[in-house]
Image (cartoon, rainbow, N blue to C red; front, side, top):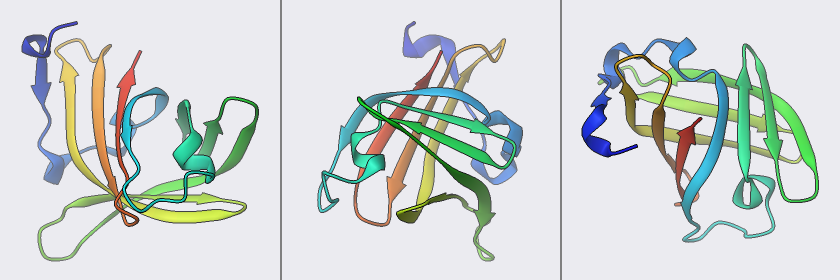
Amino acid sequence: MSDAFLLDINLQQLPDDYLTGEWRVADRVLNQTDPSSHLAQATSLRLEPGALHVQTGASQEHGQWSVQRDALLSRPYLELQLPEEETRALITRLRRSADGLISQLSLYFLSGMEVQLTRP
């Protein structure tokens, strides 16, 4: 679907439930990130209330996630906790179709990795 049909969501008023669901990794830039980490190898993420499922080519990892906001600007961060990996990612952009069925989510991780997720 063309970007023209997607609307930017105000991140300061982002409801957490906009993030739940199955996300496919559409693009990734590793920068300084360890390429062997589960998040660096992820092909998809599934966010359920309190539960995180990371699918890599050969395996699946389970963990937890939450949204935290900084006190000054109320910018949302995605906190991801896996058995061998714990990190934070700034949510830099969320776009959705008017019906909410199609979304794009951009994340910037502490390690410098940038990930673009799409749904469905």
